[in-house]
Image (cartoon, rainbow over all chains, first blue to last red; front, side, top):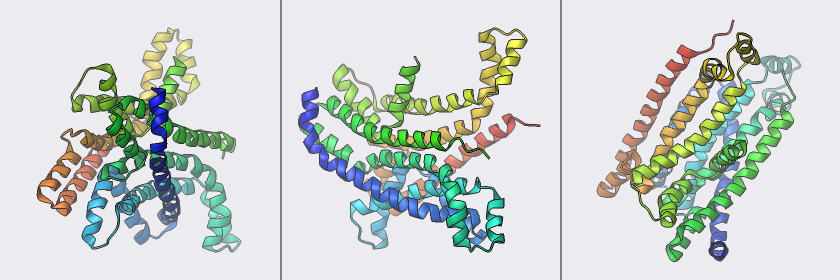
Length: 216
Length: 170
């Protein structure tokens, strides 16, 4: 069993890289867009906040698998020529962005409104208030749940194998297709995914413990 | 017991559902020498998967029970078993209800993964119609709202339940 795992390892490297690459791109874009939308949700006027709320509730109400298929098949209909890779990246990014925006909203709204008013009263502009007053305080509320969304991204990225992108999951399936020994390969896959995600979860837990002492 | 449960929770929460689905449907029968239907296997997988999340929910709920309640139970002479049954469990359920409904909504969404085993659920139906008609836009224009609407009906029902059993603080 161990021998089968070791033999398979070289064939999984590329897949693992694709999984990590997709996760990394998605996490980066989702972080950027999610924080912007989160600020829009918390401080935007109704005509900004409402559409975000609507889209966010809609996207979070759809299973990620359905979203991946829908975007994978529908993007080409808009006449935009994208390859498989980017269409799933778009799907995962949209999904994770909405989750990150909710996390950001929660973190921002947990800051006492007095902080924002204090910033206003000493004449800071909106972006200065965000940058120097709100974000540094919201960060500790933001990080632990945000890392949970990163874990969800890595787990969700396994679903892209279903549209034919050779990520870790599909690489495992391909090796099984040649060796007809599913169990060792699946166990190996579990170990690899577990190693990635458990590390992330531990970081999240560490951060949570570290920031827990601050009580308002 | 504690270590075993912790290992189960950590393992399940850090592995993709898709991989678990494959393990249960293709992996275990190949070693065990028995077979079961796709639906059975998926239900079992999802139960194990969601179970791990619920363990966390209930653990947080038990932690959140005010110590005074348990002490009060002890003070009126309830046995440990009675304390669990009449004090801790009812309080825990009221505390965890909101997280519980979130977990159930995720569970509902995760059922779409069953389509990879050709379990005839909504996503599989969508794919089937697509491969037979190539009318992709229409299919997803119907399927996506179906998920959203069902999800929100579920959520609405659960919120009603929450409101009814919410702990009112004075």
